[in-house]
Image (cartoon, rainbow, N blue to C red; front, top):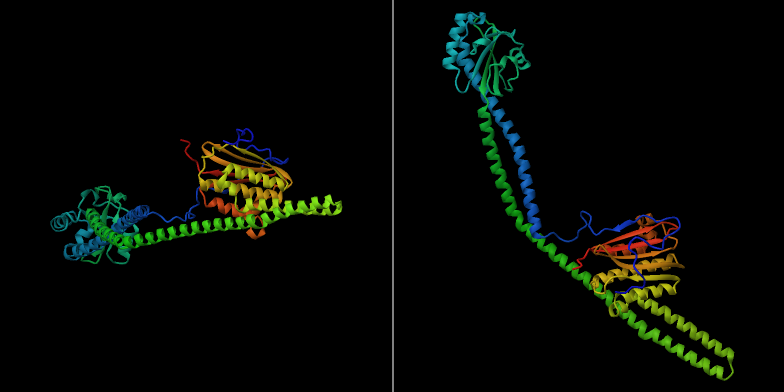
Length: 474
Protein backbone atom coordinates (compact mmCIF):
# COMPACT_ATOMS: atom_id res chain seq x y z
CA UNK A 1 0.00 0.00 0.00
CA UNK A 2 1.37 3.43 -0.95
CA UNK A 3 -0.04 6.36 1.01
CA UNK A 4 1.21 9.93 0.94
CA UNK A 5 -1.33 10.95 3.60
CA UNK A 6 -4.21 9.33 5.50
CA UNK A 7 -7.19 8.69 3.29
CA UNK A 8 -10.34 10.58 4.36
CA UNK A 9 -13.27 8.40 5.35
CA UNK A 10 -15.77 10.22 3.11
CA UNK A 11 -14.97 9.60 -0.54
CA UNK A 12 -16.71 12.69 -1.77
CA UNK A 13 -14.80 15.04 0.50
CA UNK A 14 -12.17 17.10 -1.25
CA UNK A 15 -10.21 20.26 -0.45
CA UNK A 16 -10.50 21.31 -4.06
CA UNK A 17 -13.90 22.92 -3.85
CA UNK A 18 -14.64 26.47 -4.88
CA UNK A 19 -16.02 29.09 -2.58
CA UNK A 20 -19.46 29.02 -4.13
CA UNK A 21 -20.24 25.55 -2.81
CA UNK A 22 -20.02 21.91 -3.80
CA UNK A 23 -21.63 21.09 -7.18
CA UNK A 24 -23.72 17.97 -7.44
CA UNK A 25 -22.38 14.87 -9.14
CA UNK A 26 -23.32 14.42 -12.80
CA UNK A 27 -23.09 10.87 -14.19
CA UNK A 28 -21.35 10.88 -17.57
CA UNK A 29 -20.95 7.11 -17.99
CA UNK A 30 -22.97 4.44 -16.23
CA UNK A 31 -21.74 0.87 -15.90
CA UNK A 32 -25.26 -0.40 -16.72
CA UNK A 33 -25.70 -0.19 -20.52
CA UNK A 34 -28.76 1.62 -21.82
CA UNK A 35 -31.35 -0.47 -23.72
CA UNK A 36 -30.15 -1.08 -27.21
CA UNK A 37 -26.53 0.00 -26.42
CA UNK A 38 -25.17 -3.49 -25.76
CA UNK A 39 -23.13 -4.35 -28.82
CA UNK A 40 -22.49 -7.92 -27.70
CA UNK A 41 -24.43 -10.37 -29.89
CA UNK A 42 -27.04 -12.35 -27.97
CA UNK A 43 -26.25 -15.90 -26.97
CA UNK A 44 -27.95 -18.69 -28.85
CA UNK A 45 -29.62 -20.12 -25.75
CA UNK A 46 -31.02 -16.76 -24.67
CA UNK A 47 -32.21 -16.03 -28.18
CA UNK A 48 -34.09 -19.30 -28.51
CA UNK A 49 -35.60 -18.83 -25.06
CA UNK A 50 -36.81 -15.41 -26.12
CA UNK A 51 -38.07 -16.83 -29.38
CA UNK A 52 -39.97 -19.54 -27.50
CA UNK A 53 -41.41 -17.01 -25.06
CA UNK A 54 -42.46 -14.82 -27.98
CA UNK A 55 -44.14 -17.72 -29.75
CA UNK A 56 -45.93 -18.66 -26.53
CA UNK A 57 -47.15 -15.10 -26.10
CA UNK A 58 -48.31 -15.04 -29.72
CA UNK A 59 -50.12 -18.34 -29.23
CA UNK A 60 -51.86 -17.05 -26.09
CA UNK A 61 -52.95 -13.85 -27.81
CA UNK A 62 -54.08 -15.71 -30.90
CA UNK A 63 -55.84 -18.27 -28.70
CA UNK A 64 -57.81 -15.58 -26.89
CA UNK A 65 -58.72 -13.84 -30.14
CA UNK A 66 -59.59 -17.18 -31.69
CA UNK A 67 -61.89 -17.92 -28.77
CA UNK A 68 -63.84 -14.72 -29.35
CA UNK A 69 -63.88 -15.30 -33.10
CA UNK A 70 -65.01 -18.91 -32.69
CA UNK A 71 -67.83 -17.88 -30.37
CA UNK A 72 -68.94 -15.17 -32.77
CA UNK A 73 -68.86 -17.54 -35.74
CA UNK A 74 -70.67 -20.24 -33.79
CA UNK A 75 -73.39 -17.80 -32.77
CA UNK A 76 -73.76 -16.60 -36.36
CA UNK A 77 -74.07 -20.18 -37.59
CA UNK A 78 -76.52 -21.08 -34.81
CA UNK A 79 -78.64 -17.99 -35.46
CA UNK A 80 -78.81 -18.80 -39.16
CA UNK A 81 -79.68 -22.43 -38.43
CA UNK A 82 -82.33 -21.33 -35.95
CA UNK A 83 -83.86 -18.99 -38.53
CA UNK A 84 -84.00 -21.81 -41.08
CA UNK A 85 -85.56 -24.22 -38.57
CA UNK A 86 -88.14 -21.60 -37.63
CA UNK A 87 -89.03 -20.98 -41.26
CA UNK A 88 -89.56 -24.69 -41.80
CA UNK A 89 -91.72 -25.01 -38.68
CA UNK A 90 -93.72 -21.91 -39.57
CA UNK A 91 -94.42 -23.04 -43.13
CA UNK A 92 -94.94 -26.75 -42.42
CA UNK A 93 -96.66 -26.78 -39.04
CA UNK A 94 -97.70 -23.40 -37.61
CA UNK A 95 -99.21 -21.65 -40.62
CA UNK A 96 -101.43 -24.62 -41.65
CA UNK A 97 -102.61 -25.06 -38.03
CA UNK A 98 -103.69 -21.46 -37.45
CA UNK A 99 -107.44 -20.76 -37.13
CA UNK A 100 -109.46 -17.60 -36.71
CA UNK A 101 -110.66 -18.96 -33.35
CA UNK A 102 -107.06 -19.28 -32.17
CA UNK A 103 -106.44 -15.68 -33.18
CA UNK A 104 -109.53 -14.73 -31.12
CA UNK A 105 -108.12 -16.60 -28.12
CA UNK A 106 -110.78 -19.34 -28.00
CA UNK A 107 -109.75 -21.84 -25.27
CA UNK A 108 -110.71 -24.88 -27.35
CA UNK A 109 -108.70 -23.61 -30.30
CA UNK A 110 -105.76 -22.88 -27.99
CA UNK A 111 -105.92 -26.40 -26.57
CA UNK A 112 -106.04 -27.97 -30.03
CA UNK A 113 -103.09 -25.87 -31.18
CA UNK A 114 -101.17 -26.76 -28.01
CA UNK A 115 -101.54 -30.46 -28.82
CA UNK A 116 -100.08 -29.90 -32.30
CA UNK A 117 -97.16 -27.86 -30.92
CA UNK A 118 -96.28 -30.39 -28.27
CA UNK A 119 -96.45 -33.25 -30.77
CA UNK A 120 -94.68 -31.70 -33.76
CA UNK A 121 -92.67 -28.65 -32.56
CA UNK A 122 -91.44 -28.90 -28.98
CA UNK A 123 -88.37 -31.10 -28.63
CA UNK A 124 -84.82 -30.98 -27.37
CA UNK A 125 -84.09 -28.47 -30.14
CA UNK A 126 -87.10 -26.18 -29.46
CA UNK A 127 -87.76 -25.31 -25.82
CA UNK A 128 -90.42 -22.59 -26.03
CA UNK A 129 -93.15 -21.53 -28.51
CA UNK A 130 -95.25 -18.33 -28.42
CA UNK A 131 -97.80 -16.60 -30.64
CA UNK A 132 -98.23 -12.83 -30.25
CA UNK A 133 -100.71 -10.31 -31.53
CA UNK A 134 -99.30 -7.01 -32.87
CA UNK A 135 -100.51 -5.42 -29.62
CA UNK A 136 -98.22 -7.62 -27.52
CA UNK A 137 -100.83 -10.05 -26.23
CA UNK A 138 -99.67 -13.68 -25.95
CA UNK A 139 -102.30 -15.67 -27.85
CA UNK A 140 -100.55 -18.97 -27.24
CA UNK A 141 -97.56 -20.23 -25.25
CA UNK A 142 -96.53 -23.69 -24.26
CA UNK A 143 -96.20 -22.17 -20.78
CA UNK A 144 -99.91 -21.72 -19.86
CA UNK A 145 -99.20 -18.92 -17.38
CA UNK A 146 -98.18 -16.64 -20.25
CA UNK A 147 -101.37 -17.06 -22.31
CA UNK A 148 -103.50 -13.93 -22.34
CA UNK A 149 -100.83 -11.71 -20.77
CA UNK A 150 -99.67 -8.56 -22.56
CA UNK A 151 -96.07 -7.36 -22.81
CA UNK A 152 -94.41 -4.50 -24.67
CA UNK A 153 -92.89 -5.76 -27.90
CA UNK A 154 -89.18 -5.01 -28.24
CA UNK A 155 -87.61 -3.44 -31.30
CA UNK A 156 -86.71 -6.76 -32.96
CA UNK A 157 -90.29 -8.05 -32.60
CA UNK A 158 -91.74 -4.84 -34.00
CA UNK A 159 -89.36 -4.95 -36.99
CA UNK A 160 -90.30 -8.56 -37.69
CA UNK A 161 -93.96 -7.51 -37.92
CA UNK A 162 -93.40 -4.22 -39.75
CA UNK A 163 -91.08 -5.73 -42.38
CA UNK A 164 -92.14 -9.38 -42.56
CA UNK A 165 -88.98 -11.40 -42.21
CA UNK A 166 -87.37 -13.96 -39.95
CA UNK A 167 -85.18 -12.39 -37.28
CA UNK A 168 -82.95 -14.38 -34.95
CA UNK A 169 -80.68 -13.31 -32.10
CA UNK A 170 -79.10 -14.49 -28.85
CA UNK A 171 -81.38 -13.61 -25.94
CA UNK A 172 -80.07 -12.91 -22.42
CA UNK A 173 -83.52 -13.73 -20.92
CA UNK A 174 -83.66 -10.48 -18.95
CA UNK A 175 -87.11 -9.49 -20.22
CA UNK A 176 -90.24 -9.92 -18.08
CA UNK A 177 -91.78 -12.29 -20.62
CA UNK A 178 -88.87 -14.72 -20.01
CA UNK A 179 -89.50 -15.18 -16.31
CA UNK A 180 -90.28 -18.86 -16.81
CA UNK A 181 -87.20 -19.66 -18.91
CA UNK A 182 -84.31 -21.65 -17.44
CA UNK A 183 -80.64 -20.96 -17.99
CA UNK A 184 -79.03 -17.63 -18.91
CA UNK A 185 -79.07 -17.54 -22.71
CA UNK A 186 -81.25 -18.91 -25.51
CA UNK A 187 -81.54 -18.46 -29.27
CA UNK A 188 -84.65 -16.38 -29.95
CA UNK A 189 -86.32 -16.34 -33.42
CA UNK A 190 -89.28 -14.21 -34.64
CA UNK A 191 -91.33 -14.91 -37.74
CA UNK A 192 -94.70 -13.35 -38.78
CA UNK A 193 -97.59 -15.71 -39.64
CA UNK A 194 -101.20 -15.03 -40.68
CA UNK A 195 -104.55 -16.47 -39.63
CA UNK A 196 -107.03 -17.59 -42.36
CA UNK A 197 -108.83 -14.21 -42.18
CA UNK A 198 -105.54 -12.36 -42.77
CA UNK A 199 -104.72 -11.23 -39.22
CA UNK A 200 -100.98 -11.00 -38.55
CA UNK A 201 -99.49 -12.89 -35.63
CA UNK A 202 -95.89 -13.17 -34.46
CA UNK A 203 -94.52 -16.71 -34.19
CA UNK A 204 -91.67 -16.92 -31.67
CA UNK A 205 -89.50 -19.90 -30.73
CA UNK A 206 -86.62 -20.38 -28.34
CA UNK A 207 -83.77 -22.82 -29.05
CA UNK A 208 -81.14 -23.97 -26.52
CA UNK A 209 -77.74 -22.20 -26.46
CA UNK A 210 -75.68 -25.33 -25.62
CA UNK A 211 -75.07 -26.28 -29.28
CA UNK A 212 -73.55 -22.82 -29.76
CA UNK A 213 -71.00 -23.48 -27.01
CA UNK A 214 -70.19 -26.91 -28.44
CA UNK A 215 -69.79 -25.50 -31.94
CA UNK A 216 -67.63 -22.68 -30.60
CA UNK A 217 -65.34 -25.20 -28.90
CA UNK A 218 -65.08 -27.22 -32.12
CA UNK A 219 -64.17 -24.14 -34.12
CA UNK A 220 -61.62 -23.03 -31.52
CA UNK A 221 -59.96 -26.43 -31.46
CA UNK A 222 -59.72 -26.45 -35.22
CA UNK A 223 -58.34 -22.93 -35.32
CA UNK A 224 -55.93 -23.64 -32.46
CA UNK A 225 -54.70 -26.76 -34.21
CA UNK A 226 -54.01 -24.86 -37.42
CA UNK A 227 -52.37 -22.01 -35.51
CA UNK A 228 -50.21 -24.30 -33.39
CA UNK A 229 -49.03 -26.33 -36.35
CA UNK A 230 -48.30 -23.12 -38.29
CA UNK A 231 -46.27 -21.66 -35.42
CA UNK A 232 -44.36 -24.90 -34.94
CA UNK A 233 -43.65 -25.07 -38.66
CA UNK A 234 -42.54 -21.42 -38.61
CA UNK A 235 -40.25 -22.17 -35.68
CA UNK A 236 -38.77 -25.20 -37.41
CA UNK A 237 -38.13 -23.16 -40.55
CA UNK A 238 -36.71 -20.08 -38.82
CA UNK A 239 -34.60 -21.81 -36.17
CA UNK A 240 -31.77 -22.75 -38.60
CA UNK A 241 -31.83 -19.22 -40.01
CA UNK A 242 -31.65 -17.66 -36.55
CA UNK A 243 -28.90 -20.07 -35.55
CA UNK A 244 -26.89 -19.15 -38.66
CA UNK A 245 -27.34 -15.43 -38.06
CA UNK A 246 -26.23 -15.83 -34.45
CA UNK A 247 -23.12 -17.70 -35.52
CA UNK A 248 -22.31 -14.97 -38.02
CA UNK A 249 -22.87 -12.29 -35.38
CA UNK A 250 -20.62 -14.07 -32.93
CA UNK A 251 -17.96 -14.46 -35.60
CA UNK A 252 -18.26 -10.77 -36.48
CA UNK A 253 -17.96 -9.87 -32.80
CA UNK A 254 -14.83 -11.99 -32.43
CA UNK A 255 -13.33 -10.30 -35.50
CA UNK A 256 -14.29 -6.87 -34.15
CA UNK A 257 -12.65 -7.61 -30.79
CA UNK A 258 -9.57 -8.93 -32.56
CA UNK A 259 -9.37 -5.76 -34.66
CA UNK A 260 -9.76 -3.58 -31.59
CA UNK A 261 -7.07 -5.51 -29.75
CA UNK A 262 -4.83 -5.24 -32.80
CA UNK A 263 -5.47 -1.50 -33.00
CA UNK A 264 -4.68 -1.08 -29.31
CA UNK A 265 -1.53 -3.17 -29.63
CA UNK A 266 -0.52 -1.24 -32.74
CA UNK A 267 -1.13 2.06 -30.96
CA UNK A 268 0.86 0.89 -27.97
CA UNK A 269 3.68 -0.27 -30.20
CA UNK A 270 3.65 3.04 -32.08
CA UNK A 271 3.81 5.00 -28.83
CA UNK A 272 6.74 2.84 -27.71
CA UNK A 273 8.47 3.47 -31.02
CA UNK A 274 7.95 7.22 -30.83
CA UNK A 275 9.02 7.31 -27.18
CA UNK A 276 12.10 5.23 -27.95
CA UNK A 277 13.01 7.45 -30.89
CA UNK A 278 12.65 10.61 -28.80
CA UNK A 279 14.58 9.11 -25.89
CA UNK A 280 17.43 7.69 -27.93
CA UNK A 281 17.57 10.57 -30.41
CA UNK A 282 16.68 14.18 -29.53
CA UNK A 283 16.78 13.68 -25.74
CA UNK A 284 20.25 12.10 -25.77
CA UNK A 285 21.52 14.69 -28.22
CA UNK A 286 20.19 17.53 -26.06
CA UNK A 287 21.80 15.97 -22.98
CA UNK A 288 25.07 15.76 -24.90
CA UNK A 289 24.66 19.35 -26.03
CA UNK A 290 24.15 20.35 -22.41
CA UNK A 291 27.44 18.71 -21.38
CA UNK A 292 29.30 20.28 -24.27
CA UNK A 293 27.87 23.70 -23.55
CA UNK A 294 28.86 23.41 -19.87
CA UNK A 295 32.38 22.31 -20.89
CA UNK A 296 32.66 25.23 -23.31
CA UNK A 297 31.44 27.59 -20.59
CA UNK A 298 34.08 26.32 -18.18
CA UNK A 299 36.78 26.66 -20.85
CA UNK A 300 35.70 30.23 -21.68
CA UNK A 301 35.65 31.16 -18.00
CA UNK A 302 39.17 29.78 -17.52
CA UNK A 303 40.33 32.06 -20.34
CA UNK A 304 38.65 35.00 -18.70
CA UNK A 305 35.87 35.31 -21.29
CA UNK A 306 33.01 35.72 -18.82
CA UNK A 307 30.45 36.96 -21.37
CA UNK A 308 31.14 34.00 -23.61
CA UNK A 309 30.88 31.62 -20.61
CA UNK A 310 27.47 33.12 -19.68
CA UNK A 311 26.21 32.56 -23.22
CA UNK A 312 27.28 28.91 -23.13
CA UNK A 313 25.59 28.43 -19.75
CA UNK A 314 22.35 29.95 -21.10
CA UNK A 315 22.50 27.47 -23.96
CA UNK A 316 23.05 24.62 -21.50
CA UNK A 317 20.10 25.82 -19.40
CA UNK A 318 17.82 26.00 -22.43
CA UNK A 319 18.88 22.50 -23.45
CA UNK A 320 18.13 21.15 -19.96
CA UNK A 321 14.71 22.83 -20.03
CA UNK A 322 13.96 21.20 -23.38
CA UNK A 323 15.08 17.84 -22.01
CA UNK A 324 12.60 18.22 -19.12
CA UNK A 325 9.83 19.10 -21.56
CA UNK A 326 10.63 16.12 -23.76
CA UNK A 327 10.78 13.77 -20.79
CA UNK A 328 7.38 15.00 -19.62
CA UNK A 329 6.13 14.41 -23.14
CA UNK A 330 7.52 10.88 -23.01
CA UNK A 331 5.50 10.24 -19.86
CA UNK A 332 2.36 11.38 -21.71
CA UNK A 333 3.10 9.37 -24.84
CA UNK A 334 4.18 6.13 -23.21
CA UNK A 335 4.31 5.79 -19.42
CA UNK A 336 7.16 3.36 -19.04
CA UNK A 337 6.78 3.69 -15.30
CA UNK A 338 3.29 2.11 -15.48
CA UNK A 339 4.80 -1.08 -16.87
CA UNK A 340 8.00 -1.13 -14.83
CA UNK A 341 7.21 0.71 -11.59
CA UNK A 342 3.47 0.08 -11.30
CA UNK A 343 0.44 2.32 -11.09
CA UNK A 344 1.55 4.25 -8.01
CA UNK A 345 4.84 5.28 -9.60
CA UNK A 346 3.10 6.26 -12.85
CA UNK A 347 0.58 8.42 -10.96
CA UNK A 348 3.38 10.16 -9.07
CA UNK A 349 5.10 10.81 -12.41
CA UNK A 350 1.86 12.41 -13.66
CA UNK A 351 1.80 14.59 -10.55
CA UNK A 352 5.40 15.63 -11.14
CA UNK A 353 4.62 16.53 -14.75
CA UNK A 354 1.60 18.57 -13.62
CA UNK A 355 3.70 20.33 -10.99
CA UNK A 356 6.14 21.44 -13.68
CA UNK A 357 3.18 23.06 -15.49
CA UNK A 358 1.75 25.02 -12.59
CA UNK A 359 -0.49 22.46 -10.84
CA UNK A 360 0.50 21.40 -7.30
CA UNK A 361 -0.88 17.84 -7.05
CA UNK A 362 -1.30 15.96 -3.80
CA UNK A 363 -1.31 12.18 -4.40
CA UNK A 364 -3.08 9.81 -2.02
CA UNK A 365 -3.03 6.11 -2.96
CA UNK A 366 -4.76 3.71 -0.56
CA UNK A 367 -5.16 0.63 -2.75
CA UNK A 368 -3.11 -2.56 -2.61
CA UNK A 369 -0.66 -2.96 -5.49
CA UNK A 370 -2.30 -6.20 -6.69
CA UNK A 371 -5.88 -4.92 -6.30
CA UNK A 372 -6.26 -4.03 -10.00
CA UNK A 373 -5.51 -6.04 -13.09
CA UNK A 374 -3.63 -4.61 -16.09
CA UNK A 375 -6.67 -3.26 -18.01
CA UNK A 376 -7.98 -1.57 -14.86
CA UNK A 377 -4.58 -0.03 -14.12
CA UNK A 378 -4.41 1.33 -17.67
CA UNK A 379 -7.93 2.75 -17.34
CA UNK A 380 -7.12 4.45 -14.02
CA UNK A 381 -3.91 5.88 -15.46
CA UNK A 382 -5.59 7.17 -18.63
CA UNK A 383 -8.42 8.83 -16.65
CA UNK A 384 -5.92 10.42 -14.24
CA UNK A 385 -3.77 11.52 -17.16
CA UNK A 386 -6.65 13.10 -19.09
CA UNK A 387 -8.20 14.83 -16.06
CA UNK A 388 -4.85 16.28 -14.96
CA UNK A 389 -4.20 17.33 -18.54
CA UNK A 390 -7.50 19.23 -18.49
CA UNK A 391 -6.51 20.79 -15.19
CA UNK A 392 -3.14 21.90 -16.59
CA UNK A 393 -4.77 23.29 -19.72
CA UNK A 394 -7.74 25.09 -18.19
CA UNK A 395 -7.17 25.61 -14.45
CA UNK A 396 -3.45 26.19 -13.86
CA UNK A 397 -2.06 27.62 -11.69
CA UNK A 398 -4.00 25.79 -8.99
CA UNK A 399 -3.79 22.96 -6.49
CA UNK A 400 -5.25 19.50 -7.08
CA UNK A 401 -5.72 16.19 -5.30
CA UNK A 402 -5.47 12.72 -6.82
CA UNK A 403 -6.93 9.98 -4.63
CA UNK A 404 -7.18 6.24 -5.29
CA UNK A 405 -9.10 4.33 -2.62
CA UNK A 406 -11.71 1.61 -1.98
CA UNK A 407 -15.29 2.26 -1.03
CA UNK A 408 -17.57 -0.70 -0.17
CA UNK A 409 -15.47 -3.03 -2.33
CA UNK A 410 -15.34 -0.61 -5.28
CA UNK A 411 -12.07 0.97 -6.37
CA UNK A 412 -12.53 4.72 -6.83
CA UNK A 413 -10.30 7.32 -8.44
CA UNK A 414 -11.01 10.97 -7.62
CA UNK A 415 -9.19 13.91 -9.19
CA UNK A 416 -10.20 17.33 -7.86
CA UNK A 417 -8.84 20.82 -8.35
CA UNK A 418 -9.68 24.28 -6.99
CA UNK A 419 -9.52 25.92 -10.41
CA UNK A 420 -12.15 27.98 -12.16
CA UNK A 421 -14.39 25.01 -13.11
CA UNK A 422 -16.79 25.11 -16.07
CA UNK A 423 -20.42 24.61 -17.03
CA UNK A 424 -20.96 20.84 -17.27
CA UNK A 425 -23.93 21.32 -19.61
CA UNK A 426 -21.40 22.25 -22.30
CA UNK A 427 -20.67 18.53 -22.62
CA UNK A 428 -24.14 18.05 -24.11
CA UNK A 429 -23.31 20.11 -27.17
CA UNK A 430 -21.34 19.45 -30.35
CA UNK A 431 -17.87 17.91 -29.80
CA UNK A 432 -16.47 20.59 -32.11
CA UNK A 433 -17.54 23.24 -29.60
CA UNK A 434 -14.76 22.17 -27.24
CA UNK A 435 -14.08 19.65 -24.46
CA UNK A 436 -12.96 17.11 -27.04
CA UNK A 437 -10.56 15.60 -24.49
CA UNK A 438 -13.45 15.10 -22.08
CA UNK A 439 -15.47 13.32 -24.77
CA UNK A 440 -12.50 11.06 -25.49
CA UNK A 441 -12.37 10.32 -21.76
CA UNK A 442 -16.09 9.47 -21.74
CA UNK A 443 -15.64 7.12 -24.70
CA UNK A 444 -12.69 5.48 -22.95
CA UNK A 445 -14.66 4.76 -19.78
CA UNK A 446 -17.74 3.71 -21.77
CA UNK A 447 -15.74 0.80 -23.21
CA UNK A 448 -15.18 -0.55 -19.67
CA UNK A 449 -17.53 -1.74 -16.96
CA UNK A 450 -17.05 1.48 -15.00
CA UNK A 451 -18.84 4.65 -13.89
CA UNK A 452 -17.60 8.18 -14.54
CA UNK A 453 -19.01 11.17 -12.66
CA UNK A 454 -18.28 14.89 -12.82
CA UNK A 455 -18.99 17.69 -10.35
CA UNK A 456 -18.14 21.19 -11.53
CA UNK A 457 -19.50 24.68 -11.91
CA UNK A 458 -17.97 28.04 -12.82
CA UNK A 459 -15.88 29.20 -9.86
CA UNK A 460 -16.36 25.94 -7.92
CA UNK A 461 -13.47 23.82 -9.16
CA UNK A 462 -13.72 20.46 -10.89
CA UNK A 463 -14.02 16.96 -9.46
CA UNK A 464 -13.83 13.71 -11.43
CA UNK A 465 -14.82 10.35 -9.98
CA UNK A 466 -14.10 6.98 -11.64
CA UNK A 467 -15.76 3.92 -10.07
CA UNK A 468 -14.53 0.55 -11.22
CA UNK A 469 -16.74 -2.53 -11.18
CA UNK A 470 -17.32 -3.94 -7.70
CA UNK A 471 -14.77 -6.65 -7.04
CA UNK A 472 -14.64 -9.40 -4.45
CA UNK A 473 -12.21 -8.71 -1.62
CA UNK A 474 -11.80 -12.41 -0.85
